[in-house]
Amino acid sequence: MRNIFEIALNDLRIFFSERGNIISLTVVPIFMSIALGIAFGGTFGGNTSISDEPIKYRMDIVDNDKSSISLEFIDNLSESENLIVCPFDDNCALPEPVDELTIDMAIARLNANDTISAVVIPENFEAELQAFNEVSMTYYTNETLQTGNPVGSIVSATIERMNSAFVAGRVGVLIASDLGGFESDSEQEEFRQNVYSRATELIDDNPLVIRYILTEEGEQTGSDVGTGFGQSIPGIGAMQVLFTVLAGLVTLIRDRKQWTLQRLTVMPLTRSEILGGKILMYFTLGMIQYAILLAVGLLVGVNYGDSILALLILVSAFVLCSTALTFALATRVTSEGQANSLATLLGLVLAPLGGAWWPLAIVPDFMYVVGHISPVAWVMGGFNDLIFFGGGLVEILPEVGVLLVASVVLFIIGVRGFQFGD
Image 1 (cartoon, helix red, strand yellow):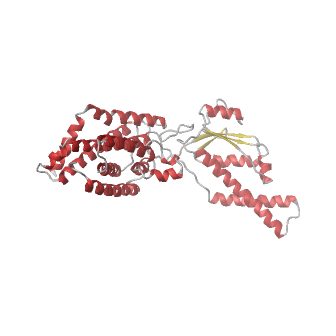
Image 2 (image 1 turned 120 degrees about the horizontal axis):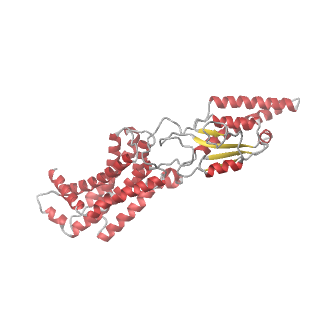
Image 3 (image 1 turned 180 degrees about the horizontal axis):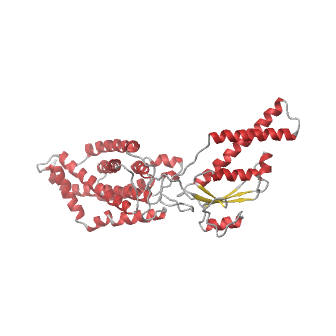
């Protein structure tokens, strides 16, 4: 075991003796992670851990109908713990108190980022619904791929709730008409209203709950909610670990060409010790790379959860998988040029494919599946569990398990096919 440590330590000394390696290990990834984090809406010192407080989104309502049904729709929206419905609620940030908003006012507030969305209820809204005609409401929003569609989901759920009650009323009238009909239009309308009211009560007893949890400190009333440094730090960390460890391909080929490996074999060292030392060296480099970026994450406010053990196991599994991939590929390349090109290509493909540059949640379903070919997708899934969903060791076990299984398979390929000479 001592020989393994000595080989790893010697290779680390050689690595850190080159100033360029130190820059690529520190300055470049730190700059990239901060730049990407800011682009995703991160703020320095912001806490990206989960909070029990719901996000408050400010939205405007332009009611052109002013009917009992439009008021009911507004009341239903106001019941959401995530919405500040303007001008009816407090904290609407209006320049002066108003009883109603116009479309121009709502759009101006959207452009100023005072609100995240606006809904325009058309005239004859109630009359068209009662006649079971199709009704369209105009929805303006500042929601983006980074913010998701939280307010739109709440509005859609509210509309679905009211639609269900109206459909129940219409079906009730049709069934009653088939069974005997009504003596007058007023009796039919009274029956429909009773069914609608009863359906509404039943839906209220089993409501569709959509709750958005605050992932950054402070109230979010505009359009700047993003994944921030909680995305960029783990993502750039994973990408840089890949680049750093896969660069070992070039070194391994160079050591073979320069007879460094061959000279080691004639020393009182077993081949297992030589391989173990090389593996330990690149694993250590990967862990150093992650340690640097995770420390930067702490400085900018990223909270990695309550389980340090879970974080350490997740990071170690990914670095181990990256190291195993390097040694598996080392059996297939024969020149430094091939090794350098392959390392760069894999780093640039596996990182974005696995969600290092953007969350996989925003990509199409088929790309989400394809992305999990990359080990980056699994480590990012684990980080999301820890950072955004308050998970612990149990929650990341699936991701860790996949990375460890991949590591075993790749190490078997690499160790069995590894060549110490030409």
